[in-house]
Length: 219
Image (cartoon, rainbow, N blue to C red; front, side, top):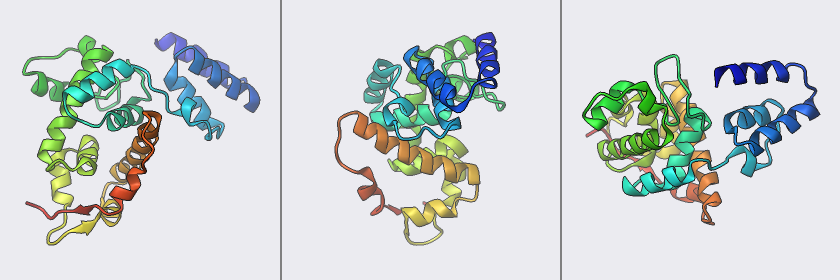
């Protein structure tokens, strides 16, 4: 909760580097994943991918990803990038919960008003979040990279960014994204997806497929 986080932030300001690493490890052991992720990043403790990319709420994520026919590793990557698995995360723009859903988006998906309490519930947030991922895939011709960009910037905007004529290699297209935030978001989610892909027991390198991907022109 908020008061606990305030205490944690105050504690951090009085620790040396070694103590900060120990504190992040403790946070990870206690299931306080967001503070562990932030703590490891602050001290440059980047090599332990298991601790930096945990899989909390794994049942909720896997069940709902499979139900909505989206890649489980992708769902974990979106949640990791959006909230660092902080169930009560709230952005300045009004996005809420693990997968940072806007109440209006949740309302549209659920076809009824969805209150803050629902969006702060991990099960219901992940259910709606993976449903939204499926919706974006359908809008973007089942292209997961375009859907990832759409999760950040909105699908209408991403359609505007598709090539005018002919196809474009994925890596070139990513660099043409006019919003720096979305450009960095897509790169981060792709990297996180590969990490979670391996965490889930898959040995293949997803980047081999991505480097061959061509972005289709506007339809």
